[in-house]
Length: 112
Ligand code: FES
Image (cartoon, rainbow, N blue to C red; front, side, top):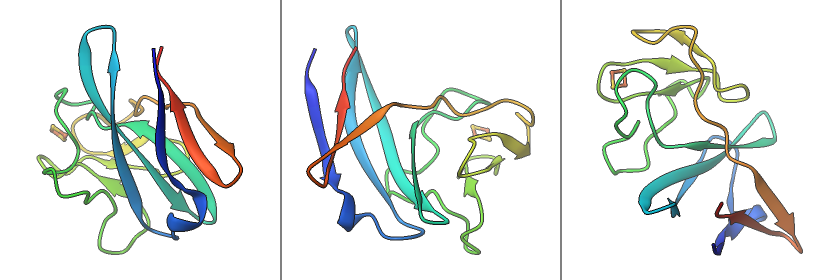
């Protein structure tokens, strides 16, 4: 179990995301933190259609309009604030949320 430093809160601007790596048991996983309408969100970087990453390794999660998150493979669209898939092959499913903590202006993730 480790504590992972993600980023300074001030560095996560509106409509941007920061990725981080962690492990669950032996399994290496990726998460991402972003900001939407001023609020931070954090999800596992795993699509609910097929369990592959939402981005192509390029930290691209937001749509061009910046109003939703999108899986680059088949275009599933997710609400940034709730993680709910509103359009696409996994409509009705939700991204797996991750619990992050802020301490002295820095975001942390605690591995299970
Ligand atoms: S893998 Fe994400 S929509 Fe198909």
